[in-house]
Amino acid sequence: MSAAPTDRQPVESRDTFGRPLKSLRLSVTDRCNLRCQYCMPEEDYTWLPRETLLSFEEITTLTGVCTDLGVDKVRLTGGEPLLRRGLPALITMLRHNTGLKEIALTTNGVLLADEADALHEAGLHRVTVSLDTLKPERFKALTRRDTLARVTEGIESAARVGFKNLKLDTVAIRGYNDDELVDLIEYGKGVNAEVRFIEYMDVGGATDWSLDKVVTRAAMLDLLGRRYGRIDPLQEDSSAPAQRFRLPDGTTFGIIASTTTPFCATCDRSRLTADGLWFLCLYAKDGMDLRQPLRAGASRDEIMARIRSGWQARQDRGAEQRKELERLGIRARLVEIERLREDPHLEMHARGG
Image (cartoon, rainbow, N blue to C red; front, side):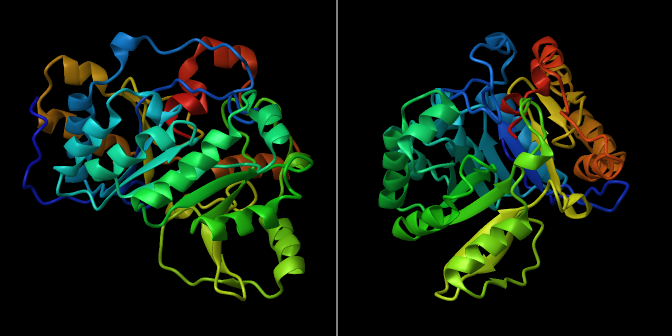
């Protein structure tokens, strides 16, 4: 199948709740160079076989099919996407897709200083860096790696080469980093980056998750309000997962409150794993195999029909269903470690959480 972009006008596809298909998260590898406790609590994992990973041409082809159905934003994820060799080449290929308004990247930042120039030159629009703490010992305890200095160097490099709208993602965990929210806001000011606080989610490898470790949006706003004073929510027409707020000095920040306040009703995201499984929800247990028909020679229209029918049948509201379990008093770990070992696709590092 040709990977060349087409001039076809996108045909909007909507699911059973009327949600459009607009955003695609592309996992380019399941491997990671950190071992964050809330994502990858084990040291060793069963990795996806390398021969099953989609080539850049296959990723570009499938992305092109998705843009014909309405997708206009892609985000490159992992694992850690910068572990995928030659990633700027993929960005250059995706840039030829005129249906894409935005190509973004989420990274842990460890390799970003080395790659920032090449990523910017390739045409990457936006970078988000995960940063959960500014304290080296805490960082080492959380990630099992002593690389905080490399992460902050990567953030500074991204700003230096000219990336605009730089974002820093922080998973807020009670008893771990909930005393650093103000420090992170202040750090973001210094590097011209907007901080997004994320409620600790019970997905995939979060085998140590418990409800009492979740720092809620209300708790975050209360804590920040005691330091900064009045905090105003921004009124925006957006399907983005973060609700954004403004501090008295004009600084903005976001909160992704999918644990306590699910936003399933406006979710327009799907996820493609590095080996071609297409997931319709972060909490989904099963995905649709797109690699097999692609490699078997299915036509572009046949692949499009599969994706369209899958999306039109979509009923996923995973975060809301998890919230309902909480109301019933039976919310617990989503997947036990033994099940994760049996199927690596259940891991968030395999599907670009």
